[in-house]
Image (cartoon, rainbow, N blue to C red):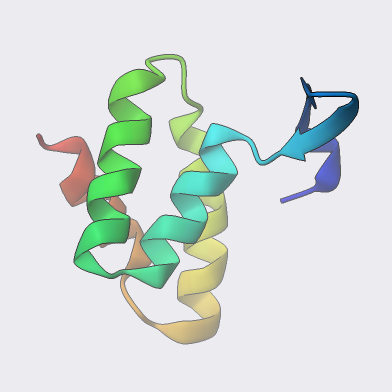
Length: 80
């Protein structure tokens, strides 16, 4: 995950950087609260071009470090 994946959007007279949909999903899955998982599902639904491979690559990395089952949690979100 990198800052280079953020997007600049003008808000008033300032440019504000926003996280990519993929990185948002990763963070929501790791947080794991029911509301976060529902948010992640909504992001996936609203972004049909979302990079599933990128998300799984990072969730696999976090899985190696924690053993928390992140890839499986994400795959359940895809089964809507």
